[in-house]
Structure formats: C-alpha cells, structure tokens
Image (cartoon, rainbow, N blue to C red; front, top):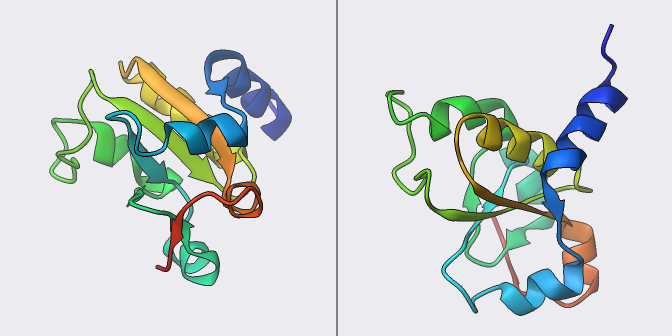
Length: 125
C-alpha cells in the first residue's frame, strides 16, 4: 500500500522546490504563471500571491488537459509554472500531476504563509 508520505516523497523527487526569497525575486521578473492550488475557502481566508491564477489541486487534471471541456487556456505544455499552496505539499502533488501530463517547467514555491512572512506581494481573494 502506498501512503500519503510515499506520494509526497515521489512528488518532491521530481518537482523543484524554490526557496521563498528566490521565488519572490522571480515574481514579475519572468513570464512564469503563478497558480494557487488551494481551494477557494482557504484562499478567501488568507489571500494569495499577487496575480496568481486559481486551480484547485483536485481539479488540476481537468484544467491541464487540452482535451477536457474544463481546460484552462493559460495552461500550455511549454509554459512556465510556479505552484503555491498552504505549506508546499499540495503544490508538489499538483506539480507532479502536471509533469505526468507532459508539462516540463513546473516549480513548487511552497506555502502562502511563508510568502507573506517574507514580504512577497499578495492580493485578497
């Protein structure tokens, strides 16, 4: 049986985790798309990274699949993506899903609380 820890270790093995300070420096400095993978209730409580798109982790397969009627047009296989969540776990798992689907440039930037604490730009939900 695979455990949650096994899935998370597998995701962390293939998705780069960017230190918060470096992520803040990249924000707005390149053409990457920032995505918050938390559900809307969590985003409403804490806000999110300024300019972040919202794609809940449980919806990622549908949003990232060009053949899906729920595909998000900003998700293209050759794009650059920075994923964030509450602490980094959901972002790692969503990132692995995207990699498994053929996306090549996906980075985990960790959690919104760390981002806010480090002074990264935010916006309300």
